[in-house]
Image 1 (cartoon, one colour):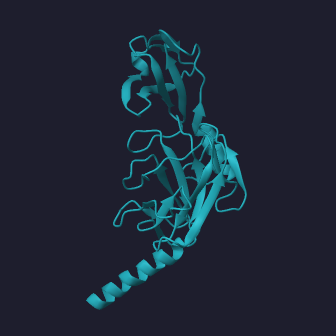
Image 2 (cartoon, one colour):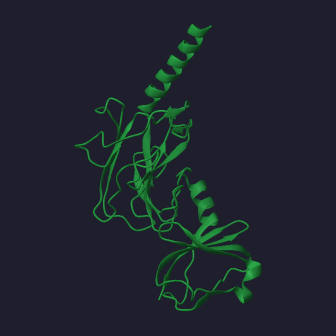
Image 3 (cartoon, rainbow, N blue to C red):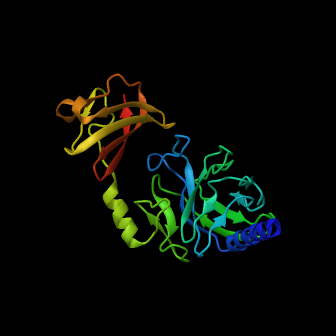
Length: 250
């Protein structure tokens, strides 16, 4: 019975390793200021991996790098429970120099562009790579269709979702960037959406400064005079949409 159990484990491990050769770098954001916060609360750079196979792929033991001369720059730790890229699915990896779990020990260069790559557990076999140039803040660079050869830019990024037109349209509907006027702000600003239910203000590290429900705001006018001067991220949530904006407090 034990032999059969270990045989199954061995076969599963072989399958995960073999499938890893099919892994694709699918979407990249090298300048993230307000698009998506990580589990650590920061707006770090991120890379989306896509698994085009019908079996799961384990990232554990694989190497991720932004320096082709140093393919073993960051290794995904063995035994991570959240490192599985599901069949025909996606997994987001953060390049924010945090060096923990799904957070690599380097950041991406959106100001100059660079090459990123993923290597097999032997540290020499290239699985996939992509080169990109200067990037626009909060605009991602991804394959036109998941796993395809052609790349393009996405004004509405699709982290951990398909790059296909249907998903892009869904994200356009769900995630929208709003403009705040005046900006920079000294005292207050008005929310133009009437169906909102939650407002959050975060600093650039992702730390929540304050949150309001609609019942606490009179005439949609938000007082920010108490904030220290600087840059903040505002998130406004409705029943179906998420609006984000950058706020400069003077």
